[in-house]
Image (cartoon, rainbow, N blue to C red; front, top):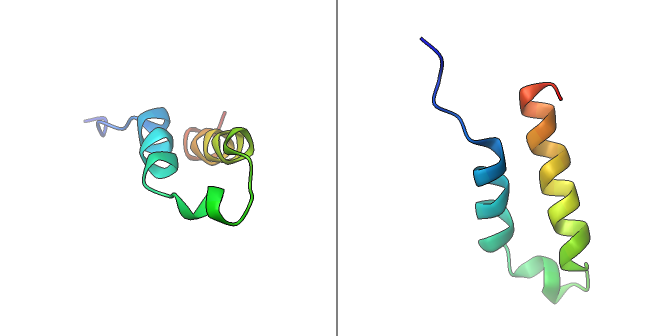
Length: 45
């Protein structure tokens, strides 16, 4: 059976749970782009 997997939801959680990214001066947009890229890697997109 397919695994119930929401890579974009996970990416949003990663960004939401990682305030350190903004603390070190990484723009939130870049953090989101990176999280989405990681999520796409999981689904092979």
